[in-house]
Image (tube, rainbow, N blue to C red; front, side, top):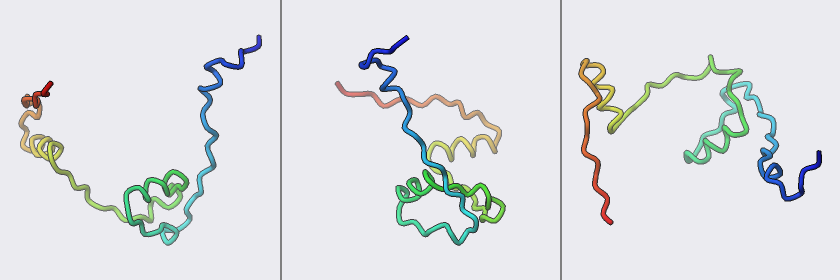
Length: 89
């Protein structure tokens, strides 16, 4: 069965993914200047081979997530309802 040339199946094809570059030492990881640079680099590189050599850093949280973590540690409910800001028309 032939598909029509204007079929939507033609538009649903995924772009071919390039193979990842496997980093073999922490020295190969560059110093990044922005979050965008980090994201772009990790789209093409993998650190899976050196995960055990990377430094573990404590996570920092703020805002509502911080409140939820603190509530959980205190054993209080984090399901408090907050009023949603009203939208002006």
